[in-house]
Length: 553
Image (cartoon, rainbow, N blue to C red; front, side, top):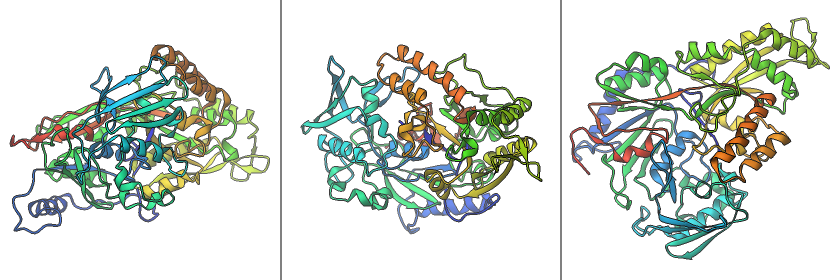
């Protein structure tokens, strides 16, 4: 899976009107009272309805971008999709994280590693009662393989020659070469063929299905009010069992202080990705239980390499040397983070321990800029080269304090080097549109790696025209190392290639990697029993949670 864009407490948040500055949160008490009344009457229901269902209220700063796995690209969307749609197989319990069947009951891999056959469960149906069959798997593969469909994990499909229906409950994948990770390559969410087959892929961005999907997972979408709340109801048709709660209401609360108030006053039961500052302040609160899990994400400054100012690797190294990344961790992450040299998370088994971050060294940065030819100065003291002024604009998400603070701090350091910086803020959806169109100079963003490391979509030249190589990085050595690694099935042997890849990555500096940390989740003890969150994500396991009153499904 391509590393996913993150938001909120890590870095980003989504749409409305372009604006500058921070958003002012609404009073927490008024929100809590309003939500309580809505729950008592049901969301949009009348107060003479039966008692309110057992509801889990989930607070997050952003909403999903889409609820169609074929086009959804945000990290939170993927978590929601894991609740709505089943994969053929998925990662099992950590730390082993061995693949386990989900929609499949099992699989067979041929001795040559080129044929993978799945045997499907026969008790899984779509919300409308239609069985989930091999036809759905084959249809999904054809859809996400279509070049007109912006499937975010297209690199995983590149080695698959065909997906064949053997019979109603058996599907076979054929690979052009032995796959490096055959289960990983085929673990996409399966979609309903009978619902989507007659729709035009030319119009996929406007499908009603993107907001009101028909799934086969533990939950189904009941209502989605943009930028306000998303309601998931327990599925009565999922063959894997019924969730402990009747519904999940995902409330979108962009302002972090407001979201924290909602947690403390009972307006939400779960705070998705709590900032470290609040974790420190609230960790001893007896009403809350906290889960700290390794964050597969990394925060970075992306330089648009289509801008000639950033084309020289020496310039990108200079910009990295000019950023005091440890101070960023100490000041903006309360010291709970680790400065990284490469885009992996600290507990990744593929991380090369010998690749160290560049130091904070403004003098060396200035020397590199001189070496790269940026020696002239204009009347304002801004560096010049061949008549080009060294100035750029940060494109950031409005209302996100961390990215704004990072931009403010680095702007001051860059000014000392003779670089002029401006900052522009956009709502999350508008922001993503600009990044996807590569209409930016620089940005501060976070990505989340999958549990099998695969940087192809983000740093291989093949990804430039896709959704994730935002910075348009292209390097033949990086390309060849990624291609080589993805021919090696043995993970230990493959690791040696990834280690070499990281050495080259640090030298090329396509982005300025800042830090990686841990993700914090807070859950109210008086509302939730059986909560568990691990490195695989939070929502994916929420079907096993239950209300504290002990009433089962």
